[in-house]
Length: 213
Length: 138
Image 1 (cartoon, each protein chain N blue to C red):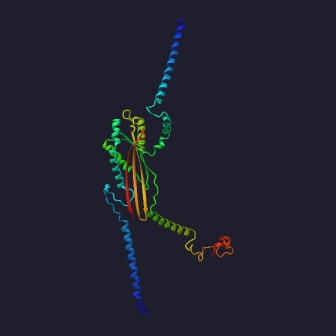
Image 2 (image 1 turned 135 degrees about the vertical axis):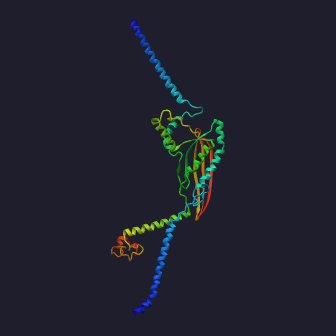
Image 3 (image 1 turned 120 degrees about the vertical axis):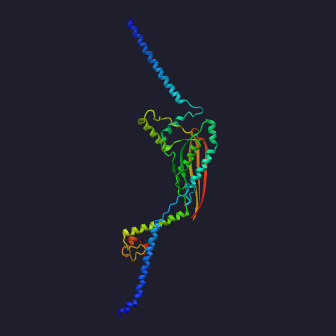
């Protein structure tokens, strides 16, 4: 009687065992997948000149395009010749403040540095240091007054005064509905004569993007 | 007699010296002030007012020089707003669940207080209208 009942329930037990094994296998597979996916970071080096658009936000390509456009505009504009004719020497520029009034965090230094580099490389425009770096220079000069040898110390009051100040602003317009979005950035740089307040050059770069989520 | 003449000449000399020194000082002061007040052609005679004003606050005004001032705004993006609403719902639910666990325990159900051992304390109280008002209903 006992053995009969045992044989009767045997297939049912096997079925439960199989199901249990299956679930363990599935769990193990899932754990393995999770582990491998967590370790699957892949880094590929790309050309900085060809940064792909990923999220549609401001990126390296935008910065580069802005710098290229601004450099070509500022070095080809009339203010340079006008200054050379009037003063007989190359103009000296100081970099002022750039205000980011767009909807994203944008650091203007990335394209401003390209612009500054072009001033120096072309030797058409002189550049003087400003901001925190200038403060550091003056602090170093102050330190030299008491620590450097008399023949090597640099004097105060011998800095070159800038003729023009370069200031700028970044603006953006966003138009979005459902999963579609257009973003337009407008970057403006202005060069102003420090003595007369006359704006001698305004450069602009517009970047428009269509983003579909 | 000779002594007095020598004394007089010395006195005269010192007086002359004093006069010359004061003339020199006066000339120096006048020259300095004239130099300071010399205007360039077409320069505004009140330039000193502005110069003093901006010299006093130049440190503050130049603090942002050669930097990017972030004056950003939040643009409305339908898709992002939807995602934010969804995240807010998830966060709210989680917060409610935590609050419930911390304050009532596992058996609290705010949607079914009738069968809840910890629920509505005043529901069957003889003074229920005193606490909840008659408009509250069952």
